[in-house]
Amino acid sequence: MSTTTELHEIAVKMVSGGKGILAADESSPTLSKRFEKLGIESTEESRRTWREMLFTTPSLSSYISGTILFDETFNQSFSSGQSFPEALTSLGILPGIKVDTGAKELQGFPGETVTEGLDGLGARLEKYREKGARFAKWRAVINIGDKTPSRTALVANAHALARYAKLCQQNDIVPIVEPEVLMNGFHTIEESFRATRAALLSTFEQLALFDVVLSEMVLKPSMVISGDKCEVQATEEEVANNSVECYRQCVPAAVAGIALLSGGQPDALATSHLNKMNSLHKDLPWPITFSYGRGLQDEAMRTWGGDKNNFNSAQAALFKHAQANFKAACGEL
Ligand code: 5MM
Image (tube, rainbow, N blue to C red; front, side, top):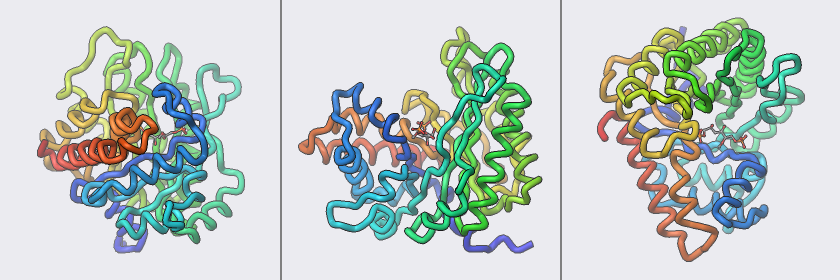
């Protein structure tokens, strides 16, 4: 079967040559919380300014292939008057859109969630495509606990991810499929391996059931990593080896690429883990790159602090992390 479709080309562009994705799709409540911690006022305008500043970082497109937007940003404009998706396209950065409406309580399964947003999704995707979106993102959240993840939560989340991915492809949009296993908790790296493996296997089972074209999608998984409260923290090499082994066992070679999330790891560690995966493993069937949110933005946000006098140094901070992750995705840090 030919894999040279337009969607495949976009998917390849998103993950190739060391470039990665800037996840700037925090919903307004999430971004407001991050602003609040730094004493930055959160208004529609301050969120717009922050994101315009990020995206106009000089030469960002040397390291960043695309960026994921939240609906509010997608419908806002640069100070020039150009819409965000149009302005990004002219900067050489593919515009993407987060289309899920968040992880909601899974009834009957305490502590577990299912991501919602399928109602009316086809029509929303059609509009986003018309306005310039080339890819989309949907995030499922899987919790590791004493009795979790349950098979029910894994299947419910995988089913929603697959229905979303199919709808994206039917609307000429590349789906980023993000089953995130949270690193919050006391679990060991072995437990993280088992949960991540189970989540990925059930995701690919549902993707197959819905006939999702794997060469036209990007997988955004979490790393296999010790829980943040686990007494024994795995080494960088163990994280890299366990993650790659897990992906090898579960991710078909046809998938266009893997773009990892940083999941709340300190930014330098997320970069180092990516570098280890790529420097220790050279014979992978897909590229492994980054689709970091906090891992790319944290230092830039602290540096900016809501003050326009800090624009240049905040942009320099983003540039530094984008460049480091680019090198890490090449295994050359
Ligand atoms: C940017 O954060 C995204 C979720 O935002 P909401 O919680 O407001 O919906 C998240 O999906 C993000 O895209 C990924 O988790 C990657 O970000 P990190 O910070 O984990 O690298």
